[in-house]
Length: 129
Image 1 (cartoon, rainbow, N blue to C red):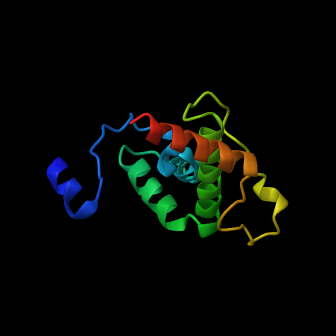
Image 2: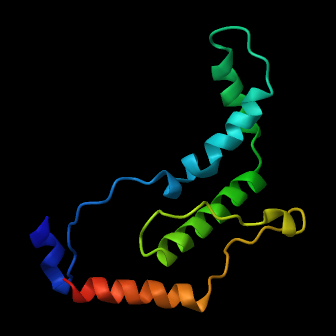
């Protein structure tokens, strides 16, 4: 694999990935919570009822809820950059309610400080190799 990554002038390295952070997993970050909230509104009185309720909640969840989850993910990624790869921060708020109904942005802007900090961290990482 390493040899294949160096062919054709490429410098692809194989590195171990850090453990998966639930902060960066869109399912853990908000999607499961949204489905769970919908599922709890359905009464269940049999052992198989929750399965059907979750399936129905999945089908009924709207795109605005999913868009909001992805905006939160963008803010989490920004916080990770600001904290130099760490996870010692509270989950950031996006203030989705400040946007007019049905007009959530696709992307969020980040500050110049965040971009500079991320660039500096990447540059340092490259220099340390």
